[in-house]
Length: 242
Figure 1: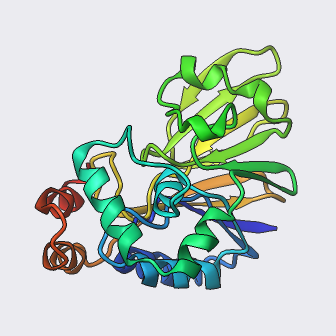
Figure 2: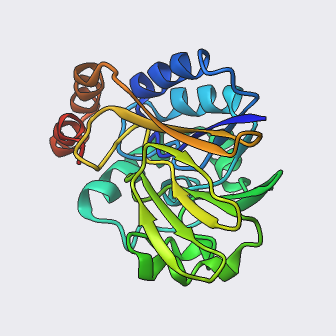
């Protein structure tokens, strides 16, 4: 079984369309979505329509959760708060109900999916360091957990002796006896200095994980953000991968 794992689209339809076209060439059997369909970008409804049609399994992200009305953006910065409230006002009742009904985490065959972290997932904690990742290994039973949220591709590996390390994203052969937390990066707003969309292909039979980058029309996405009246910074950052 081959899986495409995508995360953090954030209303960026141009990036999702480019990634969808790339996925079609990868021979995947299932598409997994790790949350945050909306927020920041100018086309939340269009992204929701597309991800609902293409994803075989989805979990909720923090921007989805707030846009649904289940939580207020009290911990969001001003840019994120402005965008998520703009998004909430433009979603239909049905779209908000759909987001509100998404699970916070889910199990696929042999791996776990969650937006932020397997430990207390509704706290929306970031896993940016080995120390932060270490606290989460007891919170899932599988050998593999896919996360998003930070928009930064990352691989945390715990060996059979409990030693935890960080591995560089790229082409990865999973090691027998090791357990992994893998951040799939972001389709719609990468923050690792590379503006290209990022997603992952996981081959369960070969036990391999590949991080893939896809170029898209950043300028088109930027124009839509500015035209919608959203903060210009949200457009500017797309070109910087930050």
